[in-house]
Image (cartoon, rainbow, N blue to C red; front, top):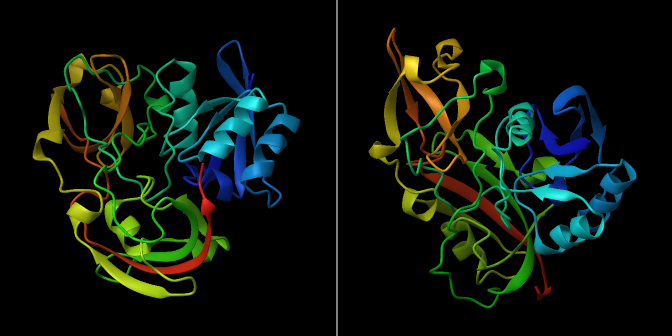
Length: 294
């Protein structure tokens, strides 16, 4: 079996149609025996499924992926596991253990969704601590329903953007990737404030927006911070503060957490999204408005 992961600097790249590289894993008897990084050859959404088919890929693990790309992957017989984030290696290991599920995430990097822990009871770190070093295996769960109003709502749009924190630090930029971001405005594929900013823009217009946490990834939830006895969590003794890992909820589904404290007896995790509680700034340029998206 061959598994491909949208790839950038060790992590799962969040825009399937914009990925520059895939990391391809050769799997035998349920174990990774080799891996390599390949280029996408500049292929866009429509051609990537064919590229993966030509590379004899059986499974694709990615972040956000549009409906058209999902259909193309299905036509090419490629199993999709969308909505994954964090370490590519860890996501593959989670998939092989049956712990990574396809959320059908029709989302992009700045999507809405609650990445908090739904249940901390009976959670378990993977017994192999080295396969537990990824984060954010969850997908886009519950994108915002109170959509914006404007002439672009319901239409496929292409935007360039640059995202920064209040101190000016850049956290993302489509300009750096050299290709605009494509999404359906108002469909819940983007975080609320980004969608609202684009809803009534003119092609060629550039706007600067400041988003509060409620317009972005929400406030940090203190109940998503929890401690577990190390003896009850096989593999956790090898984890260090700052590492991001998968745990399992009571239904056996993986969810992402970050180690924030540890002593001889307990380890403390934070299941909040890494952007939770943060104010975000975007410079957005509307490049193109396409026909209504099916």
